[in-house]
Length: 218
Image (cartoon, rainbow, N blue to C red; front, side, top):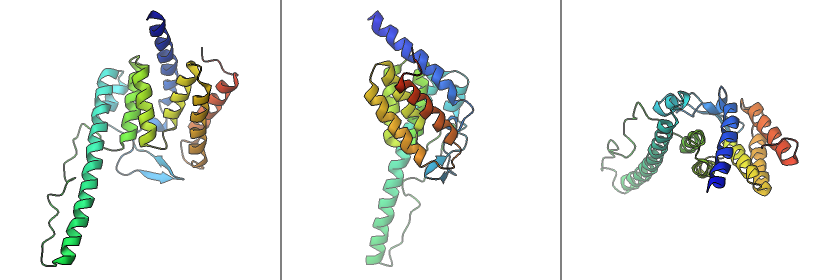
């Protein structure tokens, strides 16, 4: 058991060091409603909420809870939006059949005031930030699950793929690390002029060197 704990402590320490690459860069910011897309890669605005404030202040337990709450809120918003679209389609269908029937959407799902201390957008990013918080808390297995989930929810979270590759290499799983590098390469191919391009190139280069044995992770 001590050997297992030591291995996880090593993984956490190395990933914490890798996580410092994030500060001051684009993935330290979260998508807001006014997101814009360049070359199919989302360019984000700054997320200013309780979870991000806790993360920046080093209060990682509070950050983990906050980002998990953000992710749940984002999921509810996605469901409400889907329900609202279905309701609108149904209302339109009924209006076609009976044009005199009023189309009242004031009570449609999704008309819920956004909470001021919570970000309810872009679930993948919130899950990714949960993983970063879990790394800082020395919870690599939870972080791995969060990063995997984040990459399913969003196709552009290159740093989540990078962290998963590092974790795989630290455990001797080169094949998984190579697959994650392929994912990063795919994101890079869509990021011709996006602001995150240099960050992606840095991760790609470091990971390739680690796979080649030119960089030692332990």
